[in-house]
Image (tube, rainbow, N blue to C red; front, side):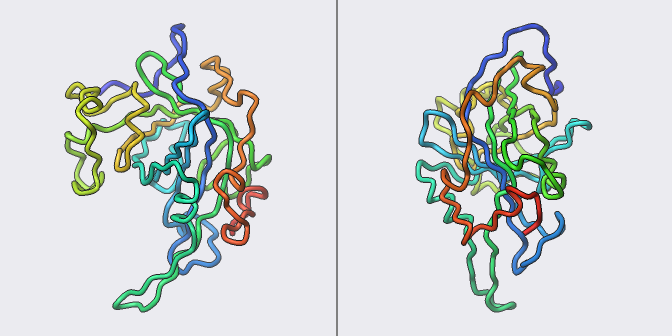
Length: 254
C-alpha cells in the first residue's frame, strides 16, 4: 500500500468540501473529574459542511488525533449522519442506564474541546482533512492530550466494507455500512477509496486518518477559514448547563 501522506508536487489542490469542525470528548462512566486520556471513553469529531444542513459525528480511535510528526495512523468510523443538530447533541448528553451487576450507571455528557474551520482537499489522488482551530485561542492541557494543534492536516482514506479488517480492528459486520451499488463501485475492488468524500455520508463508514502536516494552508495553498467563524454552542445547541465548556475556552479538564 502506498503512503497515504501526499507531499505537494505542484499539481493544483482541489477543495472538495469546507465547513465547521468540532472536537469533543466523553469521560468514562461515572467519571466526574477527568484529568487525562485515562479518564476518557471516546473522542469525537463533528463535521458540518458549508452550505449544507448535514452533519457527521465521527468517532476517532486511540481517543485522540494522530501524531503529525510520526505520521501516525488512527482508525475511526461515522457514528451518525443527520440533518438535525439536536440528534447529535442529544446523543452526547448525560445519560443513566441500569445494569444487572453494577446497578444504575451514569454516562457523563460530552465536553467540547475545540472548534474551527476545516477543508477536505484533494491532492494527487489523496483526500486531506485540514483544519484551523478558532477556540480555544490558546490551546492548553486538554488540547495537548488530544493532540489538537492550532492547524493540521490528515490524509483521509475510506475503507471498503467488502474487504476484511485486520484482526481486532474495525466494526462488527452488523455495524458496517452497506453502500448503494453506485457508491460501492467507487472502490473499484480496492481496500480504500481516497478521493470521494461522499463515502463519509453513511453511518458505519470506516476511515483512516494519517498525520500529515502542521501547516496545511501554507503547504497546500488553501484558505481554510474563508471568512466564517464556527460556534459549537450555537450550531449544536450545546448549552453550558448540559455540556461543561471549560475545555473549549480555557483548555482545562472538566
